[in-house]
Length: 204
Image (cartoon, rainbow, N blue to C red; front, side):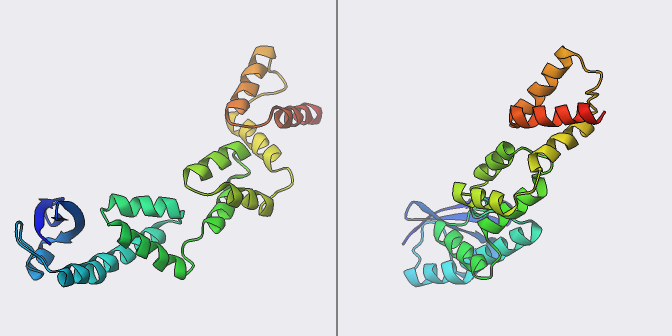
């Protein structure tokens, strides 16, 4: 293999291309350690050592650090590692590594996400957010089943009414239309909002 390009990412990190394709990122000292110079040949044994002993190890540590910082879905973790310029094989290896310890679990992530937000957001909002994070429809549905809270969406509507400071007793038709519009945009079902507002007025 030929080192076709060495390009700086930062002052200390460099992208290395082998035979015209991106291979990995190394620190300046590692370039010297493995004798990597642009235009020169590098043995497959050396490349293998770099991938397993340097890049793969670094990807695993990076994955652990990212998960210690905050819980993430597999899709989100993969994206962060890709942004860190880890090659696909290193990303795959890091994902399997953290999963083997139980640190990566999309089903658990979805359950925790639903449980922490079902009192403040609509099911539609929660579902959309989880889909964007790469959680499957099946895992989202299961999370809703496991976290089904009596009056979950109704409580979310009540909390938002309090938070927004809506005065339902004195609101005229135009104001009520705006209130319904707000909840519709948030993804709440009209019937749910109507029931909560009706009960609010009855309680008053």
